Length: 322
Ligand code: AKB
Image 1: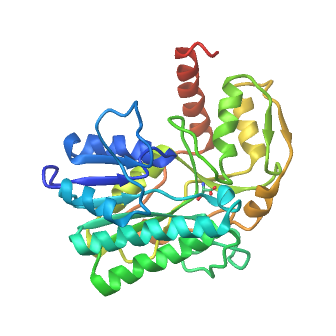
Image 2 (image 1 turned 135 degrees about the vertical axis):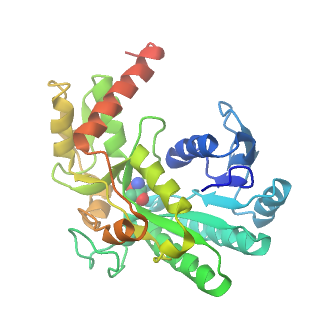
Image 3 (image 1 turned 90 degrees about the vertical axis):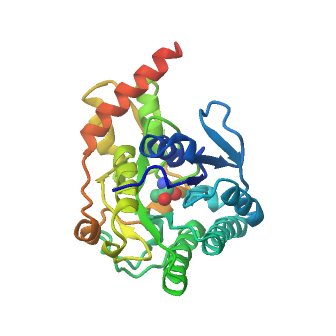
């Protein structure tokens, strides 16, 4: 049972694709005035308590944690796989520094639970490509992937050495209608729905048969909340859990969209992101998450297509853009 009144939650990276939706879900679950959203820039549209935090600045995180007596931190700020390749050393610096700052502030302030999103980007060429097991060889090909492997190991270290209750999921590509992803290799799978609804032709930066693990945003949010609410003794993996949603290629999502928009057109112009995708798994084995804390995915590809198209239609119609 959650004691709604006693928990005080800080979300770092609340303006992002996952952060913006997770923050609303946390506000539904806990007292609204106990959920503190934060990011590098103020979100003018956000309705609730918002603080500017640059998470490379440890004392700023500490100030906000002390100001609101924070008990849980969700650390969602990171530079993703494709964007990260533009400036590898800067990506390493930001992804690691922000995470180590969060871990240190959490340790010093006695934070009761911390959430850290990892990614399928931790896997590289030497991991099994289909049904990739939890305990695989990790030789990522992107700096984002390297930072997530290191981040998972730091989570494990803080758990072992200080007993800090850090929990983590290896997210696949996340598909949602509320906000756009930024800088990932799986971003095409959101953009494609926007183009379909606007009845525009889509140019895909991956080859048509590149199968990747993906997940609908509702499943991703539910997985996060279920993991964070599970009793601590159920959490056996203290690096990061594999979780699976659906797996599909660009041509499969095109087929799914064409059931609703038969004239939807796509051209394929693979770029550097194809090489990143080729190194990632096609599907994920999440048996440990299922066994330990009861994870089960709900949305398949056609479910995702139906919700995405309906919600985006509403959104674009409201703005008179379609
Ligand atoms: C990316 O494409 O970089 C992210 C991820 C899979 O972590 N969406």
